[in-house]
Image (cartoon, rainbow, N blue to C red; front, side):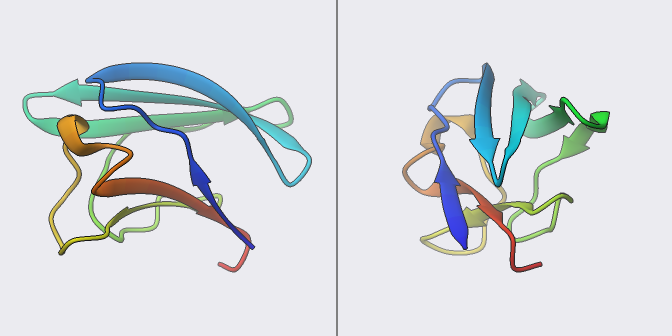
Length: 91
C-alpha cells in the first residue's frame, strides 16, 4: 500500500498523520535551500532527526520523497505538486 502525505508548499511545517495504525509526527524544515525531515511516533519516539531530503532516497520507516517530473531533490516551493512525500509499507 502507498499513501501520499498532505505536504504544503511551505518552508517549515509540522503535521501528524495516522499510517498503518501508528500516529506519526512529521516536521519539515528548509535550511540553506535544502529540506530536512524529522519523524517521530508514539511507540518509538523520535526515529529520524534532521535528515536531508533527497529524491527517491529512502528516509526510513516507509517514507520517501519523489520528484514526479524528473529527478531533482525537493524544494519547499513545489511540495505537494512536483515533490510528493510518500509512505509505503512495501519496503
